[in-house]
Every structure is written in C-alpha cells, then in structure tokens.
Length: 344
Ligand code: AHG
Ligand code: MN
Ligand code: MN
Image 1 (cartoon, rainbow, N blue to C red):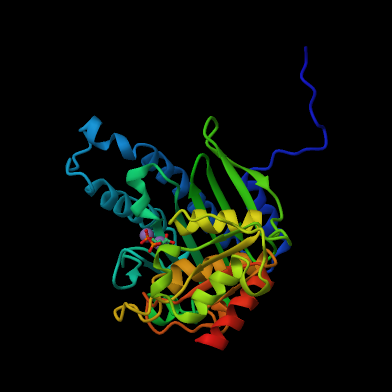
Image 2: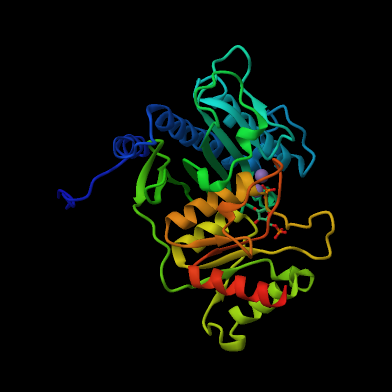
C-alpha cells in the first residue's frame, strides 16, 4: 500500500532555509549564509565525535591517552579545532574568539579576512560528557566594527554588545542533534537526520510558550547566592504568591537547559555566588555563552537579564567576562529583577 503523505508539508533543509532567509534579510549576504552553513557542518562533524565519546578508551586507536577524564578535555579541544579550521580560510571572518583560547583567534596571515566576527563556546556542558548527558555548541556572529577594513580583526571587534549580533544559535548534541538559529527574523530549529546527514526544519518559528512549565537553576548552591536570588527561588516555589505548579529541571549543560526553557516556557538562571570572590559576576561567560542565547530568547518573545538590565545591553570589557543571568518568560525575568532590586 502506498503510504499517505501530507502534500502540504515540505521538507526544508537548513541550507534551503538559510538561503531563503538571505533573500528576505538585508543583513544576510552570501557570506553570512555560507558562514551559518559552515557552522551547521561543524555541528555534524562534532556530532560524529561526541557520539564516539565513550568509545575512545575501548577503541584505543585514536592516539589519545586512556586516562579517564582526559577524553572530556579532548572533545573540548577537538570541537574547538573543528570550528576554527572550518572557518579560518573562508575569507568570511575578520577574527574569532573561543572559550578555549585566552586571546582572540586571528585569521592566519596567508588567508584573506572578511566582514564577520565569530564568537563560540565549542563544547558547552563538558562536565556532562562522562555521563552521556546532552552537551552543545554555542555561537554568535557580529559584523566587524569597520566593515571596509581588510586587515586583521582586533579584540575590540569581539567586545561588541549582544544587541549588535547579526546571527546566533546553538547546536544541541542530545538524543538527536539539533541546530537552532536566528538571523534576526525569528528562531528556527532543525533536527539532524543521521541517515542523510542533513538538518531538516523541525521547529519553525519558535516562540516561548506563554505559560511557564519549568524553572532551572543549580539549587545546590542556593545558600551561596545573593538574598534576592534566594528569595526569587522561593517565590518560584510558591512563596509570597508565586506560581504553584512550576516543576524543576536542571541538567548542568546550559544549551540543554536553555533549549527546554525555550520550548516549554519557564526560566533558566545562574546567579552570582557571593562566596566566590574569584567570580564576582557569576560563572557564565557573556560573549559566547550568554549573548547568543539572550539573542535567541528575545527573538522568541522572552527576556534575558543580568538581574538589572538586558544581557544584550551589557558592554563586555574582557573576552571572557562573566555575568549572572535570568532568562525565559518575560514576567518571570521581571520578577527576578524585582527581587534582586529589593534584596540585593
Ligand atoms: P562549559 O562546559 O562550556 O565550561 O560550560 C559549563 C557551564 C554551563 O553549561 C552550565 O550551565 C554550567 O556550567 C553548569 O554549572 P554548575 O555545575 O555550576 O551548575
Ligand atoms: Mn559553556
Ligand atoms: Mn565550553
């Protein structure tokens, strides 16, 4: 029997989607299109490696050490190399910045530079690799400050506000691999079909649901948080007229925690740990972790705040600057700001 098909449904690959978006967006030049496509390609290659994470010791032919724990390090480094090497010679980028490198990553002199700046966290949630739990890659794209400059990009090009992001997204290596991106005209999600090696549009025009379902934070550290964040957490659990039915989920891979928050409604937050003077602004990094996700959250109708102002309005002073974060449904983020203003 011939299976019934829905003649209205289209199969849209990420390549087709990016190309179609390019026609609608003044910002999206061919360069941006190709850059996004190269990131999708990096996602496919990294998927291949993450899928083999637990096998590195068994296979033993990787040339890597067998010491437990080092595989985690290696996957961070492998992902970092894949993204760099796919993008260093294309002529589309002026400079890159990665979580794994203390300084900017210049384009090698033998290659041309381009108009864009790529910031990335090659592997987010890497403490979860040993436990076969979802991990991800996060990225943001800016234009370089002087678009006519054909020389190498500089650190200032990387220190731009999230508000000036041209496109951003993440790749989630979970029970399936997904790529979620926005080029400033909504958020779209694609799922990798491993049989054909293509990302197919599975989540068009993602909007955060109005009714929140989950809250997500590492409550293990609650006692170390500032009083405002503690009080806000209690409100989330129904104190002082707070919601009565929010469920708690926390994975410890921000990409995965964010993805669930985006699709289900709710809030993800990571406040300042007041007992850790080394990290006076929390743990998560502004440029390549928070800004891309804040951009997506705003595009999807939600909000992202550092507790006082929108994350996207923060001006980074350093490449690896950190910030506290509260992101999800607008009214929950506003409530967090209220508690922080009241209790500090
Ligand atoms: P990374 O693996 O890129 O260093 O990031 C880890 C981050 C983030 O993914 C997650 O939200 C957070 O660390 C979890 O931290 P805690 O273990 O302190 O909850
Ligand atoms: Mn990270
Ligand atoms: Mn990382």
